[in-house]
Image 1 (cartoon, rainbow, N blue to C red):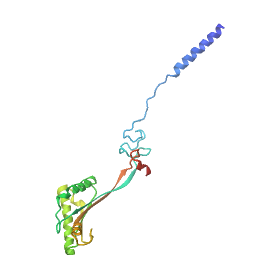
Image 2: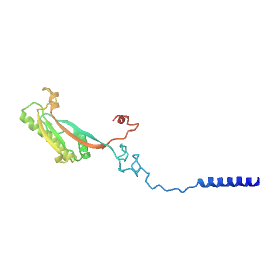
Image 3: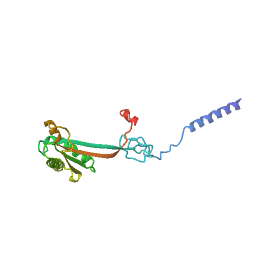
Image 4: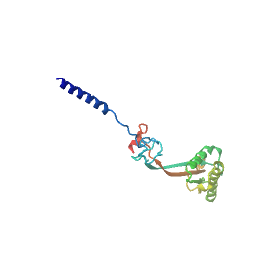
Length: 201
């Protein structure tokens, strides 16, 4: 009986020793970078594009998807009878054009001059050219837009904005049109609860 008790006690001690040693282990330091430097959801170790634009949708490698976007700006300015002088009321709009061109330094703009139907066609063609040139010169002088980036076109009375010979029609046709269009690539935005429309794309 005494021997049996000794055997049981020895077994209990052995099990206790096993339970104590089973909980100990040597921690191994991680040998990869688990941080997400650009916040795109892909850890640095797997991120092939470490400088992803904030809020952009990414693939498993952390790289953005891109889409083509058309952006443009159009401005219409109007002149007095037989005049090519641009009034100060259009200064804020011209500033917007200049800001757009600064944002897209490769883009060029087109300035088209028009005239009403009163007077001869040859005179109206020259008048429309002076109107376009007036807009161009103001963009150059007051807003530091390069002359090489502005194309002129004189339309004359060929494309009337309003038909008829009323004062309202005449005023609508004494104009110049500034048009710019640029196509560029941008990262596809990441879907979130605040942009539900993106989920349908």
